[in-house]
Length: 106
Image 1: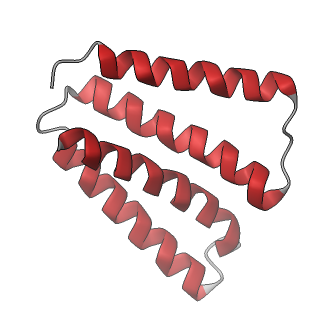
Image 2 (image 1 turned 180 degrees about the horizontal axis):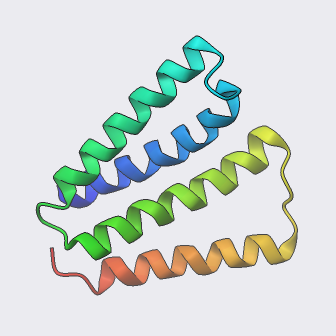
């Protein structure tokens, strides 16, 4: 169950990272509130997952999922670059996350 919490926490991290763009420096109320709620829930789920999963692995996976998700959402929603090199390094990050999962006892 800890890994499920961690994945959800990472997905929420990607969502709040993109949400930061829509807050326009926390000047827009609804995006700001949603972003802050996303941050709080994401960190709570990370803390719950870290009860079972070693913190180094949990934090790395949380950040990694958030980073991959932010890049992909940036491409889909914000028309960010999708050149080969960028996607290649995102793929390497995904491989690293899988490696951490496979080598962690939890």
